[in-house]
Image 1 (cartoon, rainbow, N blue to C red):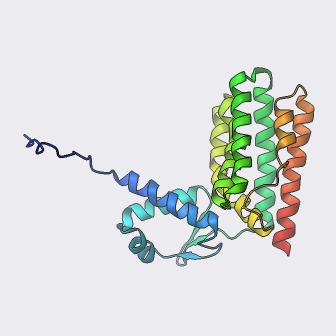
Image 2: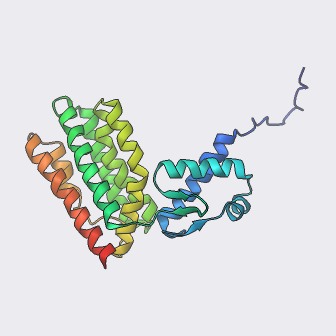
Image 3: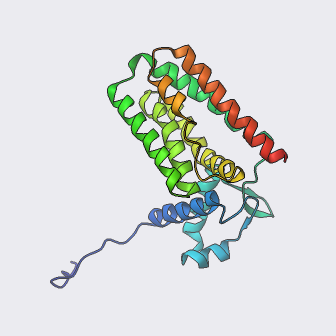
Length: 227
């Protein structure tokens, strides 16, 4: 039988290992997306364990989570490194996004609700608000959140799961793109047409905008990487 805690003492449940892993992963993700840890940098377990004050077990779990998101890459006999973007990576992520997002809007088009419209406008407003923060992580996170909405509402479980697999890597791409152009957030009107058409009455125009929106991203990122 456990002894009762002294009066006035706050009983705190011990943290679970996955809580430590999630926290470490979140801190590492922010460091990578912000550029504090640069693309191609090697992640040494001993140094990271000392930095976070944790054992290597939860650290490895955190690195495994980031690997599943595509932010880090483990190479046998070499170690774990932060993803280094190539033009091929960019083309793959944007062409995949075009297919996924087009399908998501086809799935939701005839069942868009007032709740969907309200939340889309709220997320767009939040994205615009990040322009005042000078924070690549916050702005890229808000942009991914905006694009996530259609997957959350479309009711297609496998489609949503597919999106979640690339969302973390996309946030990294967006932050790199913003830094490459000397910005900390998208330009003011980057998503205005996207939001208007998403709430409009023409699916064909929405699909055309998705194609154009993604193509602009491909061209700009490829130009940066080639340069």
